[in-house]
Image 1 (cartoon, rainbow, N blue to C red):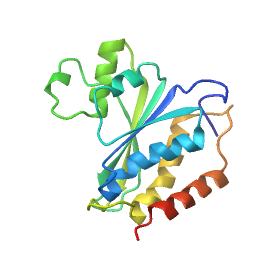
Image 2 (spheres, one colour):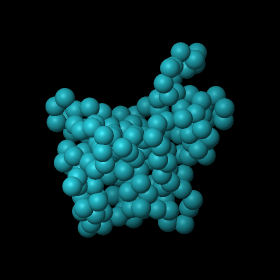
Image 3 (cartoon, rainbow, N blue to C red):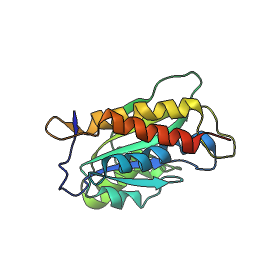
Length: 180
């Protein structure tokens, strides 16, 4: 299974990871986006943010596909979930008090007349205390997230990173993000 874009094309796939990097597992979306860009560059572009902002709509205007990645409190150890999302219905966007991926897609549609096909990947997270580093639950979810991104963006004719490359990247993440 390969990724959407051939090596010589500009990135038209955007991975947006958001979360507070100083609240441990809340940073998992941020980390996924950063590592995905390292893994699949130049075929994807990563956007990493503490929280979603209106300006992301401009970044999506030229994209064909977008994947938003965020932590979700895991009451149980549910696996990573990926769900296709669409812009909010016209008129409901003005009722939003927080910026959601669907709201950003609505802005993109309203301002640029289009928005990319999009998904949100919800990452299970259990530790939102102040500090850096990811819990074992969040780190294990990273492997599932990379596989989900690859599946969502894949076409059969293009090369994908080897499992060895993904595993080495995850091992590096483990060393970097393991709390002291």
